[in-house]
Image 1: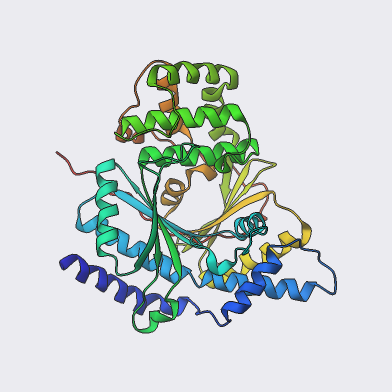
Image 2: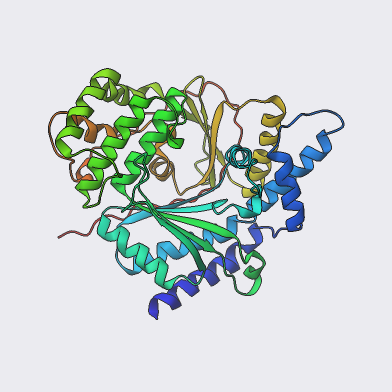
Length: 415
């Protein structure tokens, strides 16, 4: 009961303090469906179609952004459960990027009932990264038993990994508000809970994919890289007392295959060099004001990351939506962009290390495996983490957005 009361107080404080920052949705679900058909199709910008396309993006952006408050509310509840149970971990959240939304709509366009924006389960997503399987399982149970929101589906990819090796527990909720927040009822938010070891694997997949220009996250691209990643995931799974993905060979055969693949790819060397190949810079931050948002842009062609601080959510959101429309007019899709709410730069780099080429934790584990060692305890590896020093900013331009909030990791209690 104490946990439920505390969670309720968190929601009330969040509602009173933050509701003014979020707009409710002013269109109908039919409008959302129509907008889905437009942005999910082939965009041909002409004087005759431009107004219709712009209106469709406006509706789609507003529908997506109406998930921001429910997303942040659920993240606050997760943080409360982590504190109350004295667990070790940190949380993050993001609003799905429009390029990813359009890609999913296009992939589903051939279905008997085409997918629309109102059917998405992850326009808003929250993630918790826990230091151990025990803490991850405690948080999963707490969220399932004590959230007031409606749990309508879940996928346990921790104990039944995807064929790619991806491991994480997904919980799909429909938001249940009270008072003024009831305008957001039914918004679907996906919660993802995983361990540090699983997080290192997932972010390495994204970082390598961004660097080599292949969709490894979707199971596409180099067969050698995909196989190496699947084998490492199997080693991580057994180290955490879980079953590898189906069809994986035994430990001895996995290690032999990993050594061969590492020799073919030079994987350890590539991972070791990736963080120095990706460099980043940030605009000047006023010493008198702390930014509320950091806008990251990773350029696939130049391998550069630009960090721009923002102090007002409305300006950051408006700039993002304008830039997305410009991208679709030009046909360009060469950047990965995220809008982050974080207390400081260090928290930002922890939440999305893939944007900074930080795959050193994953590299350390792979290097140990190919030299015949076991997967090491992850909290030891964390102490060796180093983020590259920012270089001078070259290009001040930036585009895009994806909303996210992060918090610092709690230190383990001394024994």
